[in-house]
Length: 88
Image: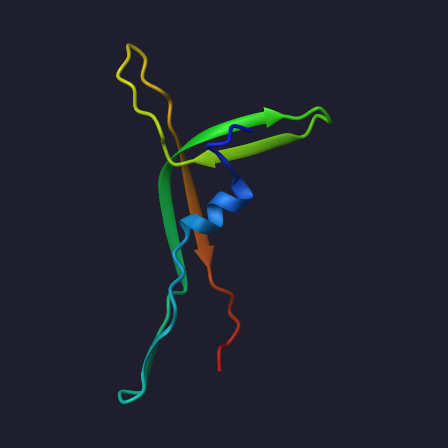
């Protein structure tokens, strides 16, 4: 895989913000994000290794070249939903 790319398993978690719960003890309120959706352009690197395994790599777009045929950028959409686990 090209060194400018990360395996998707490493790239995807980094695209999701980590949003802590917000507490207002005086008001007796707690606010927390229960889900979010991120859509972003991405460049993909697809490599088949010697064992026939497909490796997917990705990166935010690194190049934008004005040519007669512009590069094709893919989009990736990530939907994350928090477990129903109760936080005490």
